[in-house]
Image (tube, rainbow, N blue to C red; front, side, top):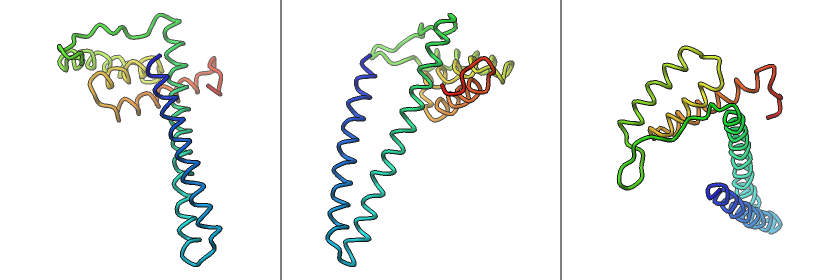
Length: 153
């Protein structure tokens, strides 16, 4: 729940920032000189990119959470029982051992979104966020392609 609140607050701050920057871009365009108009257009590009990025990330999080809820309902959600360091971080050796199991599971069932979801969690536990995100995107794509799944998840 804490992560959800943090995400909402961060998104709200970003939206406020986008509005503020966008208004400055419009002010520059309204000024109407040969230098302020192109500068205003350039400034307006930043909030457009930011809104797109925020939208894509929000969609990703919603879809990943929907997969987690479905997997949890099936009883297939990975259990977080990894050894931790005194600071609370997951022990690297424990994460690597689980990662090896998850990779093997995914190699045996490359079209199973559940295996890709668990692999994404293992990547995240091993602190490999880019690969975790790609594995989760693969899980989302496979889930969307599954005939029994609603296409608009």
